[in-house]
Length: 462
Image 1 (cartoon, rainbow, N blue to C red):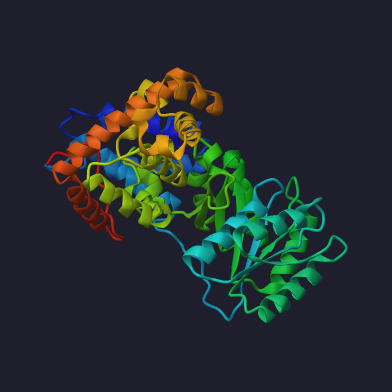
Image 2 (tube, rainbow, N blue to C red):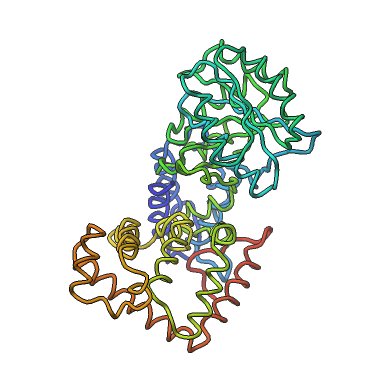
């Protein structure tokens, strides 16, 4: 997400380097580029106009501190304005009510509403330790109820059954009763969508909202629809008492216009952002972190939080002990590939590192998660003995592994060579006390990035 916007803005900021002061003359071209970049990202025109004007007023003639050059000053101003446009801070769910806390989900058909229900249920279960029940009041879309039942089973949420013969209001009333009897902390109600906003749909969901009195009413919008996302969100906001927005399918949107428009158009916070089809692909929306990623500063805090949740600590400790002894076999390599996959793949991890967006295009294109998946398949085609002692892999063994993995012998030779290089690097790293230094560094970084801290600006002189 935001790739094209990030690329355009980074090029704009480079044009300001070497200047001694921000003046109307030298920021005019930069503002023009910012305006063009935002419009190409499909940000609503009114939002673009207000944004550019606020940046212009703040940047014009601003004194540049000793530690910042004009380009960095301009980046800081744009960063702060992006944060303000998107909502200043993460707006968490309000679950402070007598259980079950009811969350009503609204949105158009095809926006990813039902999948988002399951993702939200998993997030509440794993991170908030809530017992979650889900129910579908969508009696119009074929297989909508079955889809939610399957997803509920995948995420471990209680599924409250419903049928297409029932009325949505009757389903909702019964669901509340059953959720109370099951001592559920949260009840998420999936509602029917339409291909476009229509009065019948609005009347039905208004009736559900009046009956249920949900503590949260979330509008799920397809991020790929750009300005249309903001317009649709406004239509729902005018008809319902929305408490927040969920941006779904954000991984398919390289522009980011919806994220920059929805808050400004509706006045309602973006609470979550959905990435991909996997049920763990939902994250709280942090405007400051998103702004940092747009401007190429990375998102270290999110990467650390994700690692804390998803990295297998026992395996990591086991690997650290082996590395201290100078051992790193192909089983360890395979485990590391699996850990990277759990974190969204190498490309997702690099996206969160500062400065990665400024790498040359040809270098970025070399980072391909498919090659790492191919490596994992090759290692899986080896025997346990071969994984532990790669030196025994001779010509005949390579041929067998190649047949089993569907790869060429050249791919196997490349993997073995890369493993050797990693093994040598690990030995040098551990001899110099690198493990302890790395852990201390991560601890210091986490302290700097704690809530209330600010991400560092790229290229800052010390």
